[in-house]
Amino acid sequence: MLQQTDFAQAYALVHLPAKVALVVTEKPLEGYNLITIEWFMRTSIQPSMIAISIGHSRFSHDCLEANRYFNLVLPGNNLHPLCNLAGSNTGREMDKFAEGKVESFPGKLHQLPVLKDAVAVFECEVVTQVKSGDHTIYVGEARHSWMNPEQELYYFDKKQGK
Ligand SMILES: Cc1cc2nc3c(=O)[nH]c(=O)nc-3n(C[C@H](O)[C@H](O)[C@H](O)COP(=O)(O)O)c2cc1C
Picture 1: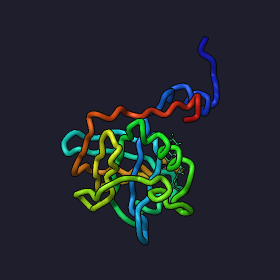
Picture 2 (picture 1 turned 180 degrees about the vertical axis):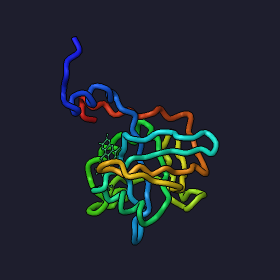
Picture 3 (picture 1 turned 90 degrees about the vertical axis):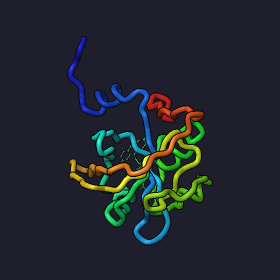
């Protein structure tokens, strides 16, 4: 029987298992950061656009305010450890590229790293943004895309917490 519940319990049910992405941003001073996100979606076919929702407290938010580019990375199964690392540490205190021994090459749009173990990567430029409570939704226009059909997409299983 359907019963009234709080938001957290209802949201937990609809997100099993979750499709996650990694987002590469450029740090305000030097280098690159990674964040794991669940809140992303396509928002336009032509031009190709992608929205990502980033919490105001995240270092990635500072990065996107400073530099208006991001790479959306759909991770393969072997990027599972990196998704855990990027989702539970802040780039204010950790160089996640070094810590995660990330293999990448410079992208074509703004040279942001393209992760070699991705299933797909979309190189985006932020074209608009909207404040959504404690997050900002950044809408990026995808300018270049990469894919590896041999990789299998990684899903985050919230029940197991990994
Ligand atoms: C599975 C998973 C999904 C997440 N989804 C989001 C998200 O959609 N938006 C967000 O701002 N943070 C999300 N987070 C939290 C950030 O990844 C986490 O706070 C991270 O440490 C922030 O890193 P930063 O401070 O370097 O930006 C998620 C974490 C996990 C593990």
